[in-house]
Length: 94
Image (cartoon, rainbow, N blue to C red; front, side):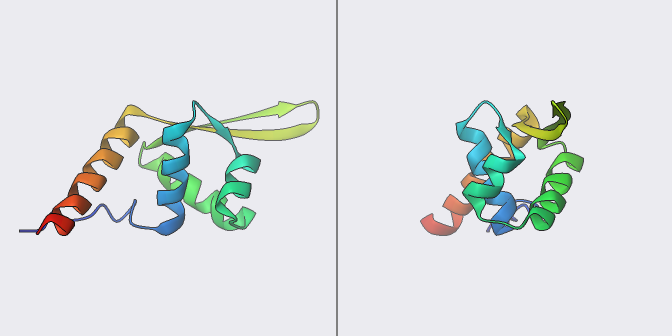
């Protein structure tokens, strides 16, 4: 039987954000926007969804007068990503 895929991670943009955050200690909004080629509005919505699920931590601050949003993956997010990848492997290995 196939394991259900986490619908939160099954979105292309959210999966991209999680993949990026797995490989770095933290990433700011501008970096994520450049790497994913997403619009600011769409990326913001997807970051909020990942944050609400506890998959990432979001820190908002200012550098001078400019706002800065920094994202970091949580242990819950790492586990969810690992579970998602293992579920995908189950589809491939069948």
